[in-house]
Amino acid sequence: MGTRERIVDAAEQVVREFGIVGATTKRIAAAAGCSEALLYKHFPGKESLLLAVLLERLPALGPALTRLRLAAGTGDVADHLTAFTLAALEFYTRAAGIAAGVLADPSLTEGFRTMLARSGSGPHLPILALADVIAGEQDRDRIDRKIDAGAAASMLMGACFHRANLSYYVDPPDDDATWAASIVRTLLRR
Image 1 (cartoon, rainbow, N blue to C red):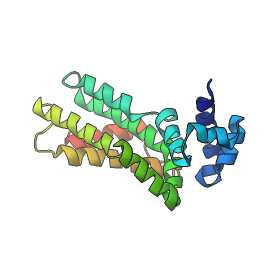
Image 2 (cartoon, helix red, strand yellow):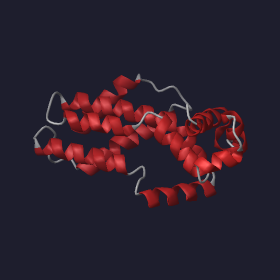
Image 3 (tube, one colour):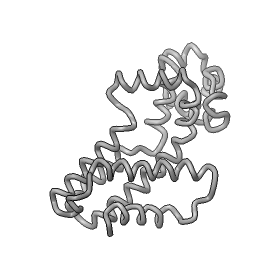
Image 4 (cartoon, rainbow, N blue to C red):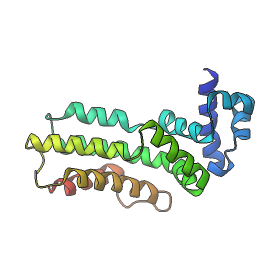
């Protein structure tokens, strides 16, 4: 494993153990077995290191969206959307700790916003991609054309985000698979 990968692994471990506030670059460097100077050689700041943890170590939405796109026009659209919903729920559940910590620190939040703007990325992109998939299925007459694709995508992703955050405080009444199927059925008016 290379130095960069060791640093990202260490950052993930330190965030899980100490939270964002306790995940100092000093702690991360110590866990990675390197100096802070070497850490900064690979990452310009804590924000970019945390973004690397989010993008490289957590279950990604990209592959789930790719699977959804590849399945377009085939099989049962509700089954495909339910599988995507479960992947989105897993992502948001695992990302919640980092996201909450970033939001709790104004300088990290501003750093993230700046970095996302520069790179042309952000949490809105999976919603837009999902809306495109839904619109494509509407064009194939597999989803009701009266449904607003953008609103449906926002509602589905918002429900996943909400359930992920709730799961840190209470045990949800239904298992995730039952919940995901119910959300998709409601969204598709089935």
